[in-house]
Image 1: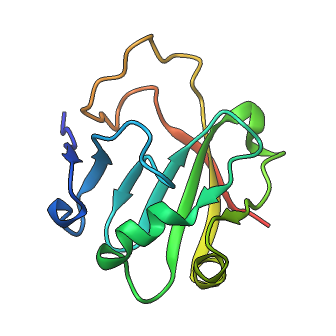
Image 2 (image 1 turned 30 degrees about the vertical axis):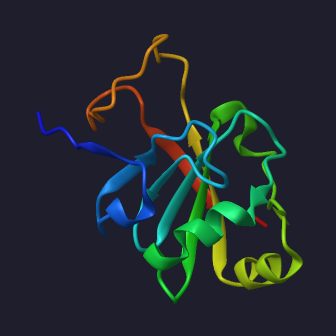
Length: 136
């Protein structure tokens, strides 16, 4: 069984392309995880989870100059209702990111997840994305 490693970062400069990173900072603005240079992940159990551009600005040096994909990871019960989210914060930064990021929603079956998640992701586990779609 192959395991994928989750890396943690204090400083954005620690992020390497192609590796799954989570911030040590519990309330890091904008994202819960990143695979540089083009994939951002935000986990939420809400239908409204706007993206703070302050966090995107912090990550700017690690992100592609082309399109970036922002994946909202939600429980499957929210999947069909989840809509495109707004950007909040500095107006100029909002405009920059709004046209630079594709938004997607991933539905996750969380019914089999226990009270504590391990930092090692096992692709054979019951924690699987069951559906994804572009958010409009």
